[in-house]
Image 1 (spheres, rainbow, N blue to C red):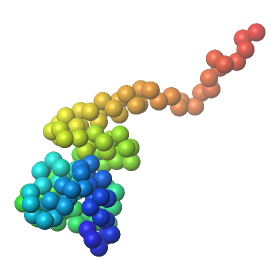
Image 2: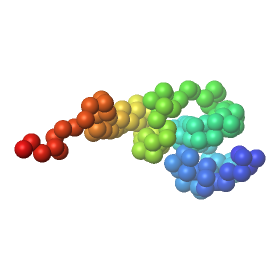
Image 3: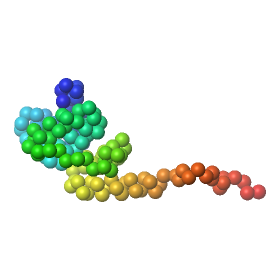
Length: 126
């Protein structure tokens, strides 16, 4: 990641973890937790697509084999900071996806309808 000029703080931010955790991993003091590493690798893949190969290398170096594909709903909505926040929570993947689905449902329900019709309710009836 040094070639990409990402420091520990930037990497930690991508994965929603503390920067000292990155330091502990780099020193070999601890092995990355599966879910935390996945959040970090997903953040790298989505924020810096040109570095996807490095995220895959991180995943394999931690001993987890091949990196699983990112759920479509996360990939398609990664630009939404709330979706990123839910994806980076320290919860099982199914729970994180449930939170994201509910958030996106509520967001779509509260969005104004854009059906091409004009709203006549503000006009004076008199």
